[in-house]
Length: 76
Image 1 (cartoon, helix red, strand yellow):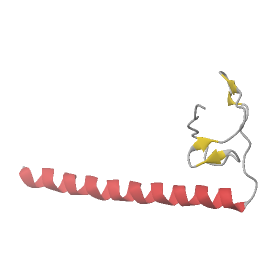
Image 2 (spheres, helix red, strand yellow):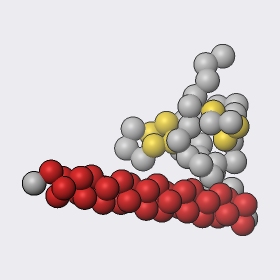
Image 3 (cartoon, rainbow, N blue to C red):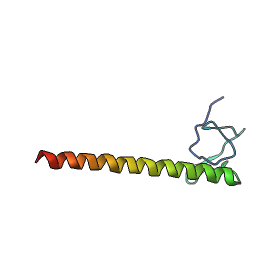
């Protein structure tokens, strides 16, 4: 049986990154017609955790860019 990798993070059929639905319908214009969002705070909490991780990465990138800028100024 083929496995379908799913990029939705809040679908009720999501099982370790793969779709567990018995049948999947894909619409080329709108995407997965089988998608059903999970109701409840668990999905929202997971989304908030991902947003926090992204913010941390952005802060780290900004810090690294500042270091590069300092190095370039020292060279001249």
